[in-house]
Image (cartoon, rainbow over the protein chains, first blue to last red):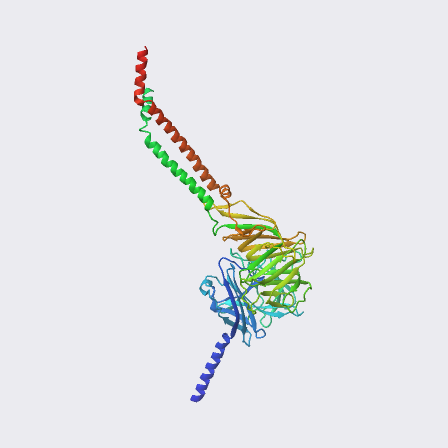
Length: 232
Length: 327
């Protein structure tokens, strides 16, 4: 092979690998606010987090992976600890042109303090504003993980006053599937107190799910979310 | 028997009673010092960071300052926006539900006189307002959008048989009631009633004790710091109900028209009566002082008796001599 052709091939390979590396850092943090206070606990919202199984079983703020889609460039991340001592809100814009996972480095001033949390004790809720088929507001929810995601389990963490929350969705054949959530056995459930295992694996589009925190209550209402599975 | 009496008389002499009396005096002084120490402890013991203040009150107004970035969201059902910056909502129209989250440094006034609508006003706290126009007050999620709020907002919440309850969880600084002035532009909301119950640690074992409640009277104002609690209103009852808990710091109570607020703390008698351990120690020490005092008096009397009757070991002999002479 001609020497010049070899150089050209090597250069192209380097450029492509650089582009791939740039793709993994293709985001810009627009706003970042955080609060860490061991004395003043905070609360999570109904849907406190949506987590995929990651390579790490502890929190590493430089290794938060989130799933993004090109249709939603502006993404919000709410990070909250189970004891309510830490919370952070991030607004970011990504430039990824394909659906996939990107690595986020949370610019926290409390990196050391956050390492004490297990992967399911400090969790992230990643969402983008959207509309449903009726033009009503709904949040598109993306999975996140600490460390590179595996194809393992997806789980919602919710914060509710109800004792038997559940979520439901329609499967491919149009049947409604109801999934109960489980109470988290942890003394420090200030920010979220139930976990719900999500097993839908549709990759190309989000699934409309309804979370009903208090199905036992008369006239209880559900909150809807468009959930991406993040599976390949 | 005679030997026994002789032995007693030998013991009861002014010289031999000096040492026991001196020892008893020292014990008496120590006991008095212990009583003084316990009294000082009851009088001057301050409420520390472990003191828990529980407040339950009925009031027409609460001022709540958000001190944490992620304070609990406020669930709004059947609300009427009066002032806001959301494009999806029109003023004075009723909306079914919304979710309001407020940022750190925002002050919220929740007001309800009689059984009228609840008025919720959120503004930047003047102490933290730096004039930054990009600063966000909070976010409102309704059925149509997620709306970012940049300036003050006012919402009215309607209670009805279909929507009988409004409840708001708070984490932050709270003021119960408003400081009453003479402004003629409106009617001041009043605190109606309430009580402050302090739980502190016992003096010796540090177990939890409950001190006597402090009553909140109509027109008073109470300021609490880093408080957790719930504010609730119901369709059938007037005003608002608040239950709060604060750990450490202090609670400031302003009586109606008083110039300065005073910290809520227990009095001497309150602490002694509430702290069983302290009361037991104090009463035991006082009884012990009485016993020592009685013992010293007895010793003094014996010493006095022995000194007036001559040498005690000579007494039986003198008596015998006197009897022989009579015969």
